[in-house]
Image: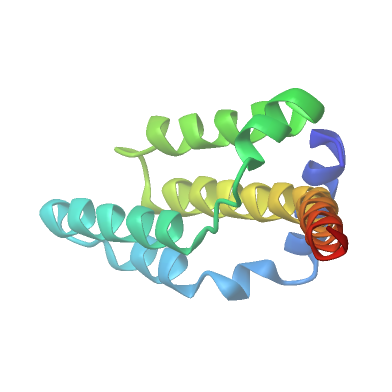
Length: 135
C-alpha cells in the first residue's frame, strides 16, 4: 500500500465517521484543559499509543528495504506528532491517530512476510530433525 493509498484510506475512514473514535480529542479541544494537564495528557496518550503498537521482529528493517515509501510515511507522521506537540489538542490527536493507523497498516503489510519467514525456519528445523532421526 502506498502512502497515497493510506491517505485515501484515512480520508474514507474519516468520511464515514472516524471522528467518533476520538471523543477525547474533540472534548479536550472544546473544554480547554489547563496547560500543565495538557502536557501530562499528551505524554500519557503518546505512551499509550506507542505501547499498544506491536513492533514485529525485523519489521523496521523489512519496511526500510522493501517498502521505503511506507517507512518514510510512518517516520514523517511521527515527526508530525512531535511538531504539533505544543499545538492544539485536536491537531495533536489527529497526528497521533494518523501515525497509529499508518503503523498498524505497515504491520499488516509485513505480517505475511513474517509468517513466510517463520514457516521457512520451522520447515528447516523439521528437515534437520528428520536428518538426525535417519542417522
